[in-house]
Image (cartoon, rainbow, N blue to C red; front, side, top):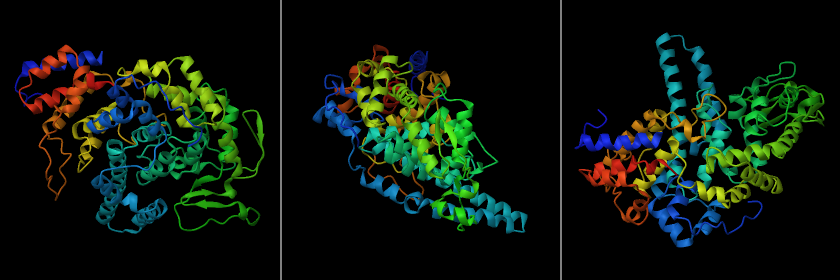
Length: 514
């Protein structure tokens, strides 16, 4: 039973009732955002993955405006030494993508040479488990950075863009690619120029494979990627393009694909100079449509790979893209229904700075709409999970992110797990439900009691670690306590143990919002 270990069933049931109520480098940016008068924890809960004791101390020391300016233009990352060691020990951190994936592809092909059914079945299982392991490594690295990175805004934006340029790890062998996709296509550009970010996704094998562009060839055109590139990644569904534009963009994208072999294909002699191989990405001129195209009313001269660069330029700098991206950023950082005025101001900043993401965000963070929204956004699953661990353990390094990965699966927002290319919904209403609240209570109870398994690794002992987090700390009394309503305070006063008190705090209505 959910509350079987809680001393007072009456208190717990009352507390769940409270929860049910909860569920009904580019252009310089201004150094003053007008945030120094806002409660520091409210700002932290929005621009970081969640307030913690150390982040609260830092923002109080340097001031909110300076803290935000540093987050918008981050320097070298800082991670606890043991967290850095965990990340460096991962296979995906040690081996380049092409080497890893080509070896796996050769291993997959060898399955067909195994005569024994039992041996083939065992080998197939081992191959799938290796793909699962690599995907789990990617999720582990991502969550460790979310939890411990000093550059919190960059990590939030990495998740945002991963969700925007969504790929599904369950397709083909993408489990072996998602880590590199996040680390090399998304993360370096998360606060940079949108054009660079878009290009990095266009040329990454994970995206090309996820949206079937490796099947896109002259006389056998596949429009899937072209359509999503316009509808989901740049212009938006109301961006003014036509079905003819989709067809023309698909023609432009012909020949861009993935090569998982060590061999170079036979290219016609007159086209050999146009063949391009970068890692797993391949542009095969044999498969490209060299005819002229008309994209968004302008002729694109057929000349090979350069056509894709021209299309990326045009799409990334289009006014419809500025509006679509600005609105989505506002949805993420302000709320479910951002004002047209805010989106217009952000769009102007986007266009004025040639798609500078940090500058566009600076416009958002300086707005009255942002200040008014603080504390009112219901957390989606990943914000709840990461903020709970950050609040509970601050800079104390967990030994495994496994429980966090599992919690995200349970709540329906697993990393790289969205089956459709539209990404997980950003609206709060998508995550407010009795089932969500019950699961969050269980997670809060596990973390609060120290039984979550975050410090349990086979063959290792959790040394010098508290059995459960000490949430009744100076940060709580100085800041968090002041945000609690009377019902939550009453429930906390009736807690029968520190562990129960922790569970109630991590499950409180106030903690569900950012």
